[in-house]
Image (cartoon, rainbow, N blue to C red; front, side, top):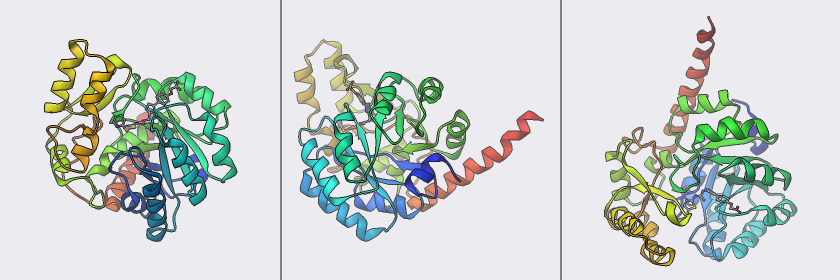
Length: 313
Ligand code: TUI
C-alpha cells in the first residue's frame, strides 16, 4: 500500500506503532519495523541513558526505519531530545505538550517531526511550525488523551491540513484502517493492539487482563484536572474517580497516580496500578507475533477497500 506516510518514512505499511510508557522498547519497536510498519520507542518516565541504549539496541535488531516518542510533560525532556538528536532515528512523535520549540533541533539532526495533537487549533499550529506529518489522537486511545473522538478529529482536521495526517485512537483491525484511508488519512497509529504481541514485554498479568476485557471496560481518570488518562477499570481507578468526585486537589490526585503506570506494566499489579489501554480491546484475544497482527490487519484493510466499490453498484 502506498500513502504519503509510506513515502515519508520509507515503510511498507502505513502503520505507526503508538508509544506506550513503560512498555514500548527496542524489542517491540524493532519487531514492528521489521514487519513493515514503523516501531516507536516510548521514553516517558525513562532516563536519557536508557533512551540512548534502546536506540542502539533497536539499530542492532533492524536496519529499517524506527522512531522515538518524546513525552513533553517529562521533566527531563530536553536531555531526551538531545540524546535522540545525537543518536539519530527516522522520526520522533511528540505528545502531551507544545512540540514547536523542539522542531529546529530535530530538523538539524535530519529527524522527521510528527506531533500528536488532540484538536484542530494545535494541528494548525504545528503545521505552521514546520511539522512533517501529524497524528490526530481521539479519546478512544489509551493513556493521556484529549476530549474529541477520532471520528470528530478525522472529519474536522483532515480537510484543514496539507501535510500527511495519521489517525489514532480506537484502531485495532483492518476495517478501521480502511475507514481511516477513506476519510483521507495517510496512515494510522496503533498502540493497544500491539500489547498482545509476543515481542511486547509488558507484564503477562497485564496482557491477561486485556484478553479478558470487553468494549466497556475502560474509564478515564483525571478529566476534572485537565489530565485525562484512559485505562482499564480496577481498584486504582475506582479509588481515583471517587476522590475526583469528592473534589480532591490536583496535587492529591497526582500523588495517588504517581508510579501506577510502571506498577501495572512492569510489576504486573493490575489492580493497584494504572492499566493504560484504549477502548478497542475485543480484538485482543491471544498472544501473537507482531508480524501476524500487522499482516492480518493489512489483509483485512485490503479486503475492505477492494469490496468498497460494490457499494456504488
Ligand atoms: O501523550 C500521549 N499519551 C500518553 S503520554 C503517557 S505517559 C503518562 N502516564 C501516566 C500519566 C500521564 C502520562 C501516556 N499516554 N498522547 C498524545 C497526546 N498529546 N494526547 C494529548 C496530547 C496533547 C495535549 C496537549 C498534545 C498537545 C497538547 O498541547 C498543549 C498546549 O496547548 O500546548
